[in-house]
Image (tube, rainbow, N blue to C red):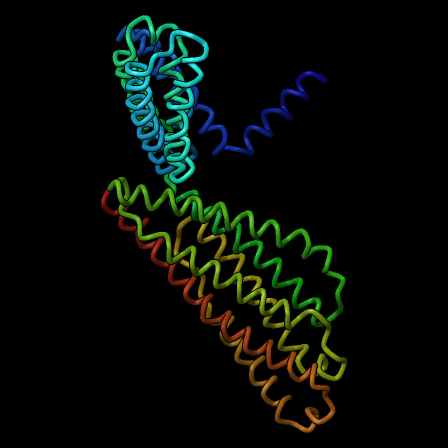
Amino acid sequence: MASSGWIERIRSRIGARPAELKLALRVTIAGTLAYAVTKILDLPQGYWAVITAVVVMQASIGGSLKAAIERFSGTLAGAVYGGLVAAFVPHSSPSSLGLAIVVALFPLALLAAVKPAFRVAPITSLIMLLPPAGQAIGPLASAFDRVLEITLGNIVGVVVSLFILPARAHTLMTEAAAKVVSLNAELFSVFIEELTAGPEGRLTLQKLHPQIRSALKKAEAAAEEATRERKSHLTEAPDPEPLIRTLYRVRHDLVMIGRAASSPLPASVRERLGPSLTALHRVTRELLLNLAEALQQQRRPPDAEGFRAALDAFTREAEALRSGALVRELSGKTFGQVFALGFAFEQFQKNLGDLLARTEELALRRTNEAAGS
């Protein structure tokens, strides 16, 4: 009984991570397939193809393409240059080998420092000098074999990424974007509660901000991979950059709202603006959560009419407050706080509308793909 419960817990944890499970399967298949191909071709150091296939395999097709290009370009540069050093720089004694290592490493290390895509070049160059196999068959032949093996590993890795449980970078990007939007809903709730109740949500903010930054970085990385997929004509999805830019603009708007909500409103102002703030909180949270679900499923975004109406109601109340007799009783700080809050909400409305439009584009693309298939 105890062992069965332990097994069930493992299954539930694995089942809760389908993307990670698919990646693990692709890595395993890529490594095994590369090994089989090297045995069929009888490559002398086929393990490099296996290692490359595993290294190339990333969470998305775009990521695998990037890793394959970088691995190939770095290996080609390292193999060619390292092979030339091994052929023309004597390295039979320890002292001459040390000098050859310096000659082989420094230019490629400088290249890798300037262009990180070539970071495997110094390693490959060293391999040209150090392994006995390379010296036994000659440096140039060793360089050719190394490039062939790495190329084979790249091909296997990309093919497996394309056809075995493929994960499109656009999907990963929209999932990360959905996480950002759902966290923004929680953040908005904390800000409104601070305005109407007090700074009890500070601890929650300390947890939310790092989570939002992490989700934004994931979305940005996936967008870079999605761009690579578009340039490789592997997808007809829209340009991902506008979505990422809009997410950052919405993030900036929420930061502005957070600054305006850093202290609770005075009781007299809360009594006047409280009902409209409460209504705005409710519809905004609902809109953001529904929008996150729409991004997750790449379907049409929710209607924002309720949000616009609630924001208009708050704006009217805020304007009436600033122009009424109560304004003479307000401190300069409170007056500025109400003004800043209205301005931040206005900017938030504009960029949220842009985010809804980006979501509409993604949904339209998915509808067109379904119709085409």
